[in-house]
Length: 330
Image 1: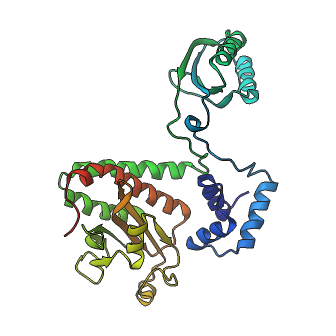
Image 2: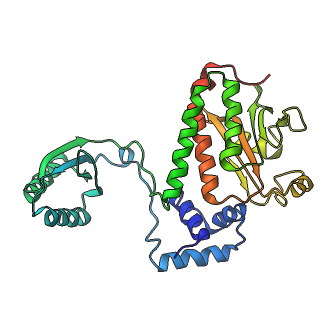
Image 3: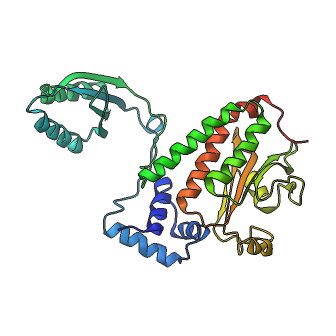
């Protein structure tokens, strides 16, 4: 069985298999899990030994490293008494095939999908004939398409029903924002949604100024709604908010009282704050705004992942606004 720490390790390695044990330890520490580098290495050894981790792979861009023939094939089945046996044979074939890199059963208009990679068109023709000869009694409709890989991602781990439901809810929230024609109303609703959906103590949005020297607080919800206080204007070279804008990378913590990146520890202790998450809203490769929240509860890696997804999708949804409007603060 895997526990919460194992899940985080596997999730991080799924995104970047080259992460070192030291980097994994720092990530775990930021999420509130006290563990040494040695402890991480012991867990990795256990996960490898029990075959939870079968190996570490590089994801290659086929358009750059080869001129192989990529074909995606979809099948519709004939159904008879022999169908279960034929499907078993098809399963064995795709598992053993050196040409097949992906295969899955489908529901809907078609029953099966395979992705094949061949060295040449001649090899494709030979294997296609072989495939049709083997499974002609099973196939009622065979369709083959030339395909070019646009995105190849590591296998997503632990996407359980609860997580799927929470992701679905995020996209519902994003869709609901479209009803606001006024962008001020839309951004205010964004911080309100963060407070409600993520259980934040308060949430805020800062915009980068035209000179990219400061961030200007524009929207706030939750415990603090004012935007004219101490942090209404933040240097891009200071504090966690400035770091997020400058690096275009998130900052997360489950120990805000002791985290050196977060100021006013006495205030955080008084308010019983546990966690912080701040993510950039990006346009053309640089941060144009920062969305952030504090919470009185510790957030797990799924919470951070979902807040990251929320911020990433926000950037996409607001791209047109960033492009057409002079949104940067004076």
